[in-house]
Length: 597
Image 1: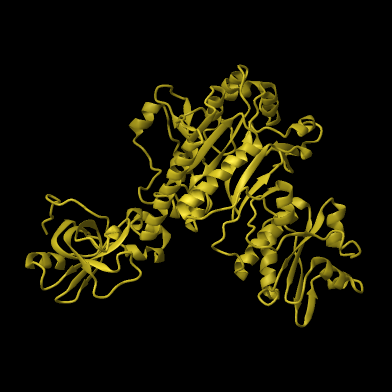
Image 2: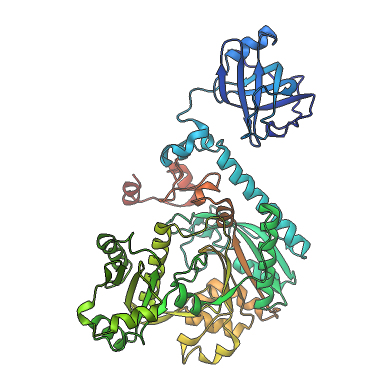
């Protein structure tokens, strides 16, 4: 088949944007569906905006009609014709009232039979879709997601530009610094044996920009972290990154709230009320068992340590004596759904994430069945149920342990049950700001207090005197923005006192030599005066995922990686020629090659 050229034709409309009152239109796109019913041929032409119907019949020029007979799915077409009403309207299409009676048809490219039907790719296994990602990206759902991602980035720039921010690019090749995850390293050909690192974030450079007097910086920045992947994580990701001088935590949060309000209005057409609800980290953990709680439903964790004081159940008493507590959640109406077998599955899950076990009360029409009934005295169960606010039909789950185990366990079970009971409203946007993050966390293995944040995070002023004496009480001038149980952004005020910064490096266990080697240029910069400043980074991928209602980051990233950080379509990472390695002064061991194979 000889292919046509575009010569003499120019697109006048995108497919789904052909107006009902247009006289004539020239459209381009992929053949989505072809229906040949003898004297009539109908082709649904698809582009990124949607579909318009092309029509051919006995009145069509014979050469054009015969060319239409050759068209198959995914052929690339260009068509010109008169716009007319459809005989049978299609309410599902934006152009469902009209069709184009084609007078000129060009076949610009032909397609072999695709490995799967593009518009039904949602039913295809992930590996096949990712191997042919360029085909999957033709799927209207993914195109809609990527267009929304574009709209979010566009609205972000509009918002920050209007608030006096300057967009400044920071280096993609920088010095390797300890920021939590492993760096992706780039070998230098000129400086053999030395390496650049791809940025985990533009953190150091944006702070230096504040030192340099650029008081409001923003960048849609690519970031890289060599860490194990999850459903909500990719090795390379995009961050809407900002930093501000002469501001405090409240000012940072207000700027972030304004950004989210602007995005939701511009992209979704929704007004979200601001200021957003704020709760402290401690409150979030105590109520929801998570520092990124989903507040679209209740089932909050209750502290029943006092309520069970008179109950001589060794699990409860042992936990309290060890400095822990007894916590519970009440799942309303869940007793019918969660049989003993189902509760055993929840118990296994709880054990898998650190719990020693799980106690329960299942209250059905036959009465309240309690897993620790033999330890109860007369009236104890009624008092406990009353304290919990439980009623017939409810399921009570109880965890007794150290708070750092009991709370996250119940937080995880809370989400599992809510999804199973289908009580989470899908169309609700519950934004939340988590404040007063702990500065340190205790590591049982090393027996040391470790910093929870990057080394430039400022402690709360009232906690400065407790850095050495009482690290458990130290809180950071740090915060997170959360949407429906997903962290969108982390932010904080930064340390600008070079002596305090030195102390923070030491708290991380860095020697003077390591501090000088890795961060000396930043510490030196602070010696020449730095304005008070802070900032945050919104994950563009996660924000797009949440606003699109997507299940995975893969649905909002054009060419994603899979769990082992490889890309199935291009088969990367891949080995390179020995000559390239020799130029870089690198030799790959046989062990490494064997592992890769």
